[in-house]
Length: 343
Image (cartoon, rainbow, N blue to C red; front, side, top):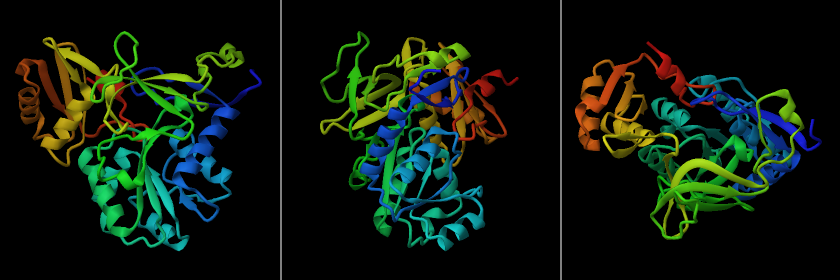
């Protein structure tokens, strides 16, 4: 094995075959130090575990708190269980993290009506939070004297690449934010040239010491050195505003064409959730064929009609079907391949 290799983590595998990401000690330490800095983690912090430790986001919480000399409250309880919140209050937890699905669940169990005196801040990563839920989190934090951080990252960059400063959480709802300390973002057009004008969409490029060494798909790959040289093409499409704040609009590979119109599958999911609050959904497809899966048996036809109308495409380009539940990984990410392969 290469002497710099310190850790192997799998990618989500939601849209393809899982790969192992090769992380170095330098990657891990630089990312943990950046997280400690922007979250202002001190020795007095006590984070309670809400995410799997083999998931890059969950592990980064462990690493950053250990680096800062802070404490961790370890539990296998879920946020839907009263015992979780009893432990939270008993041990006076100061923070927790969650993916978008975590916050959808928290809204259902009444989190935003809870009084949690010890809570100092809470974080979100693992995908784009719907703007209305982002606003709900930010308003709760503002009303209760807490800090809410939206963050952005990938296993390929150890964990975190961007964050939204808590002071701007409400004003910049929907934004991912700015690069972490020591990192740098650039937007690239279809020809790979840098985009300088605000408001234009391009692929997000990141530079930093936390960019990992590369992938491993077989044992021989463990001997490889640093193939990325501190640069990562994220595969995410984003736009930058006049103040330098970035908003993720979708995955580069999560776009299809419907009769000539370029359509974001992630954007379609957001549209469906906005039109039919409370429903869980997932979209996949290929050119001229968009499929929407919903967890409400009464909605497929209505959702397909409405989505075709909003997108301005022919109705026959959109199909919809009921599924009992949207399959997700342990980190809460949608497993699109399972939906595509379902009969």
